[in-house]
Image (cartoon, rainbow, N blue to C red; front, side, top):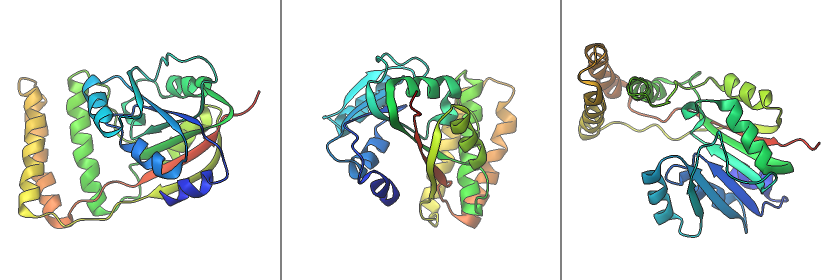
Length: 235
């Protein structure tokens, strides 16, 4: 990510905590942007961390919630959270914890997809994402619908962080082959099967052919993400 490299090219980040690291995808991005940085990743999901450890054997991973970080104050030069804000039960509590464990004058990086100003192919991704988030919530899993870009920036500012820069990132649109459409449709059907005994099942089932039709018409493109780099204010 060129903008990250440019921002940090004259800054020293010796230690970084990746919150909600999942399978460690954002650590791969950060490794390209930062030099000589020791990474730590935390996530409440054990299976995801096991996958992350295979990809990043040099990174220390721990099962942990972003709302309660088991690190002393000022432990890291920076902290990041990628594609996880919409999974947080309490966004501000997580940001407060990230601020606490980052040294004053350090950095917090947010990478999050947003829901507004999307093209038709990106709207397909959003509809699929919201389909899954609805099923997760019915199963008691915290998975909120996506924020608008302005809401993401507002949450960062509400946490008392000083936004230094914010830029959008997009992946290319892809035409969906019949095989890919079938695969995505089957995945939605598999997700829906988790709530087959619930009254919401039949209403959600009606969405699958609508999503399939949209895939055929518009293809698929990941929703745009905004990357925010903010500074932890000194006391």
